[in-house]
Image (cartoon, rainbow, N blue to C red; front, top):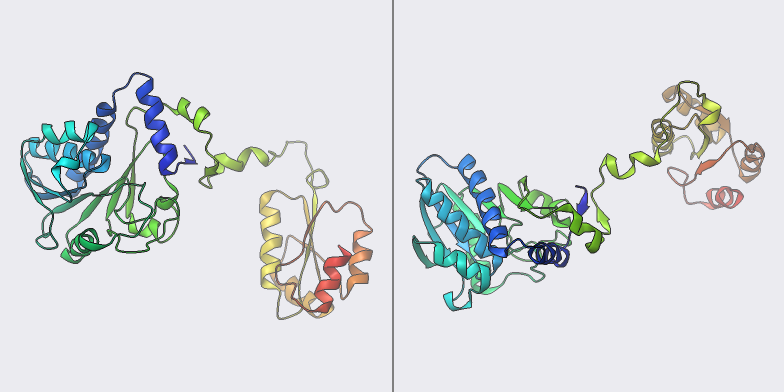
Length: 329
């Protein structure tokens, strides 16, 4: 589950699921139930909950949350941003099923045991302004714990940028797959604890969506790193050459050498000017060292054709000698 979906792709996942026979209102119901479960974890029994709802599908999820929390004995009020007449489709069905108190959202009175943020979803691509921005600021000032639905309102779902007022959530419940903003700063911090919920969308829809952005997890790249065989040896696993700068510029090159070893290189050689040999030797125990004062030295080292990977850049410098060494590579 390392694929990341933007708002358009998530809408496509919803559409494909609905075309496959699962009604949209069932998806909304499942999403709302998942958020309600997390709300119960964050709120004392019988506590006061304010559910901030927009007029779109994110707000529809909020109406479902409100209904389930009220049924569980919580004191729930829905605060609606926008005109009731703008609520359409599945969100309208969810709103009509909500039998509790609904009032207009304002920029005051948000102190409670929990605020559920269901104002705007991942599709928002503009900064919040006007009344919406003032309401978000008021929620943040209240000091109340906040649970966001899918994504904190005001956050750019694709970039994680906060270009205007953004809800500062303590936790966020998202569905099916993460969005880029859940991982990119400052979005990662504004989401708080990320809670993942499956709502009935089958992973088979990804074959048609064809995601191109992925979370950097081991399952994404582990297959590209060969597993050592019991009869293997260092000469069968590659020899990396790392170029280092002078005595006062060696740290990054040593980190690169260590990374090459951890990635599985059988041999690593660190080539540095003579004045840096002692510094590197004092810090490295698993890499070999060679002296390389100039481009000619690099050429001599590379005459050994057993090198099959070269790192040139970290701590190498930007002067003429560094350039000549890179050109020699």
